[in-house]
Image (cartoon, rainbow, N blue to C red; front, side, top):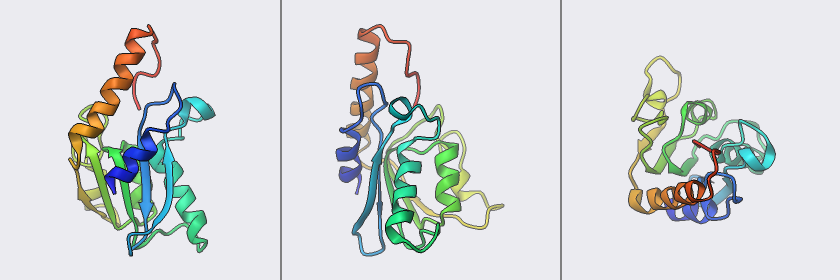
Length: 154
């Protein structure tokens, strides 16, 4: 699943942080995939996870609940994306690289396991973490070499 998310991440536009997300149904079939598109779309909510969840809901065609699904993403989701996974009733979140600055699935916060919420997906992090981190490191090294001040985060 993380390999599929990596494949998606590699399609990111030149200015967008290469993060990929894929939603799978209970049988493991791919429902939707997306890549970060904040810069391309001029949309602060255009994180890969949010875009993939929206597309998966459209693919299922029965509302916004994504019960039985798995969200696979190359980097630990931020608070917005972790919250979206909870609200969509995703069963499982799997991710590659940990994100100590903004991660909300165990690093900085743990939104998905907050007992005050009515849904708590299963979580598995650190899958192919080195490969996922390397993709980000190459992107940001290229940004620094080009003298870009943006993007600075996800």
